[in-house]
Length: 350
Image (cartoon, rainbow, N blue to C red; front, top):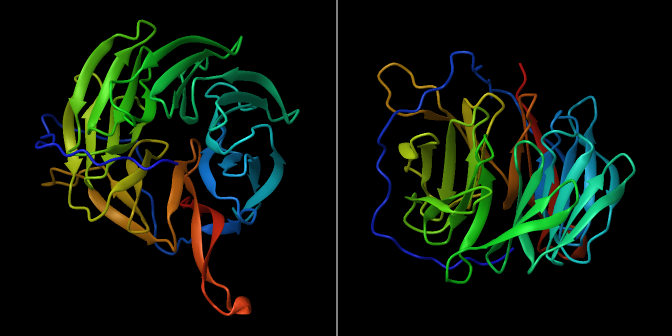
């Protein structure tokens, strides 16, 4: 992963509307729940983790160019199914097709994007881009991949032919581009920048739609809720901004935080937002407002022993998974700290 320069901005978004959660959204219960954790392969730092669309499998990508597929045992603990190695550099992003549970896309620092059929454990598509790839997002209908690289170029790949259809250069400054996300209709792509803005472009025209001043500094992450009506962004300013997609207005903000927000995501019905921050914690926000409340509330926090490298809600079950370092002490070699990469799954089903 790369270091993003800090860019200050004098303003932050002020909520203009109201965010609501559907009455059918279920309350989750965190008491007495503990994550099930398994060690990943030694020395393989995991950069990305994702569930398939049926919520049965996890995929991870690591620094040693491996892509791993995991199942859950009866206790909810991840179990390694198999590993493939088709890239020549780190696998920076893994993402399953939204329409086919057997198709997995991987973006690598080796300037390539691969499409895998997990049934045959082989690639069925391979495309090259102009630079080391860092970000990847499926168009909701599964027809197109948007891939962002370190040269701040977004490539749009036709999944059927696996050819690059078009490219879009982001801004004039280096290291401007961060995360990518599509709206539910698939006619707009949202990308975050180191300048604190969320930029919106039309697809397939690739014309600017709106520049949203979402944060006072670098934005690390963006995620849409399952309804497609709202999205959230988190950044180095320790703020989470929540936006209405139709009006592109800020409708809420969570600002009483102590550390930069690195990763975030909504659960399967959109009621809960989880985020990972630099203070080695994963925090859960209940967006359902109680009587007299203007904002949702923080309802649970998990302290982890090392940095979190992405998190992912299960799209079907009340589960969340994350990957990260698990700081340990190696007494067998005279003490001293070491980092053991782990995959964790927290089951919040009643």
